[in-house]
Length: 330
Image 1 (cartoon, rainbow, N blue to C red):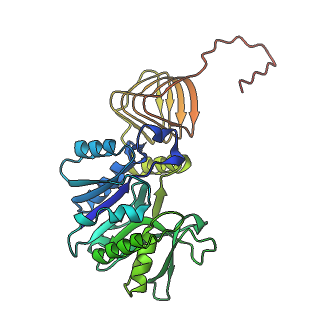
Image 2: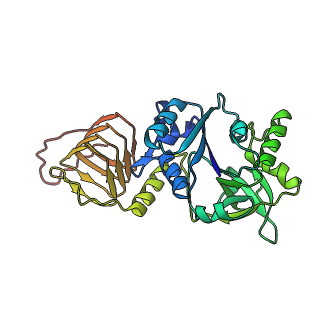
Image 3: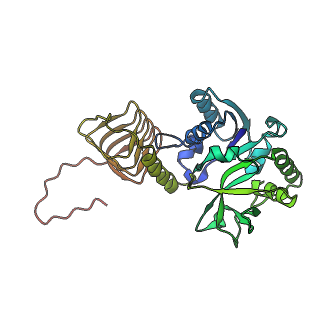
């Protein structure tokens, strides 16, 4: 089985962090989003990967080659943002006849029994019930639980089963032919070539699609979701904090602190991820992600996302305040 991971998106919802690095390399719970996905697939037994890269794609290629030299990784460039359907179509020459594929979006982290799904015969789509399905691709189910229809961001949804961005496709050649036909017809939805339109073609041809429900799904395209994902993964991974020894500093788990960090006179946690070689002094940080090589002095941060090499210096005060005094710094 071959995994295809589209990671060519610009990540506009996460600016300014994506001005200098691709969204897939933003760190959460101690490692980039793409690392969580790649290791999840390796653990499930997948060794063949195709990464569809674009914006700052050289950084993704360098990261994968450096950290996962044991996998067979190929890289395809998507020069313009034409949608996930177009991205998968670009990998057509790297998929062997009748080779099963697993498609997982490069900003999607899920909890599911992937090993069982891979071993199970047929085409399978990951679903999760959501409160507002209008912002997602949606699947409708028949009375037997098979997928009867998929639609991208419906205005009036008839189902609350959102497509979570993980697809196990047995009939890969049929999918690629459907994508090819849609591109030839310039068939777009919401201005893009979508995977749901290709699956619709297959459904109309009588191909069966089954579904599996995921326990947790994190679409890491927004700051709030990144921070929520960071918190939940830190709890799940349960990093050992007993080896963290910093001057006059309190650590409140769950916390991840990268190698080479210099921290003093601070309170860190809970739910904080700090990248390697960061420097913190007189900082109180909770529910936040601090990028590698960032420096923070005299600051109190809550639910914050601080990028790589960022510098934040707050106020250092020496006060002598009398009785019944009120001071508000803002």
